[in-house]
Image 1 (cartoon, rainbow, N blue to C red):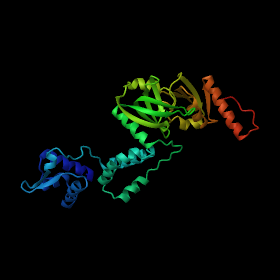
Image 2: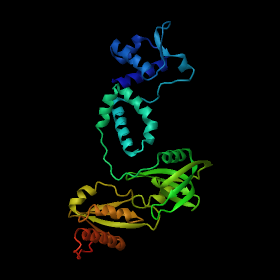
Image 3: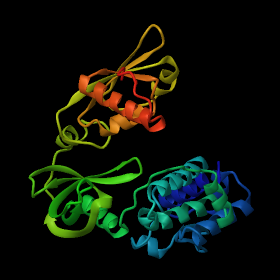
Image 4: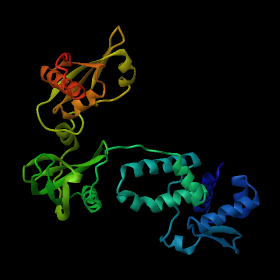
Length: 333
């Protein structure tokens, strides 16, 4: 039984029996008296557990503060492996939270987790150094806007936002009903019902120059309706006529690409010669073409014709940038 499990056991025994003797705790935990004394001291001093020794009853109980309902030990405990996993998740969260907005509020919890592991700050820092996230092209957002938007999503309140479109730079004032936050390729987006356009829209958070929380309740949109409208395309793009791309990867690329999920509703099949065919829905080809270029020479666009032609144009442009004199590039897609 590791230390975290012993903490849980001590708390459970005192909670269920009211008062437990030192001898009874020793028998239940199967540890030395010195270890039990350290555990009790740690619970009181580091985890703020209101454990008191009752001389009259010759046992340990929760103090008057707990019996008055003002303090209670945490209801969820983790073993050592789970605590290490949580610290790993902290690093992953830090990789998403480039402004430190979320981490600032969660840091007290992670400090408590570090304490539960019984390591000092130097050891905790060493644990965190063992997880490295590499990210590029992160888009910065205004921390205050992130907090305001996140709070409105949770509290189900409307927002008044000043939003600048990426294309054209048009600035507009809108009242929106937040539905959910989306993180995609190192950028954050807000899915919301726009009351000006009377429809669901996806807003890039780095395009929100100012956000003000309103007291008006947000309009509720069923999640299946939200997903049907905004998740049907490829990547972050939403809206437009749904189409289906048909792609054929070489055996060399297929060994790796077949393990990736390009879209939740994709379909695929292996061909006898080792090639891999993939079908996936999209409504805007911008992001899909970018991903296809990563596999230039190892993927053929079979359809639809407009996607095949667009891919061929991208390949010709890329080849021309390397060799301006090159004029002949096949239109194989």
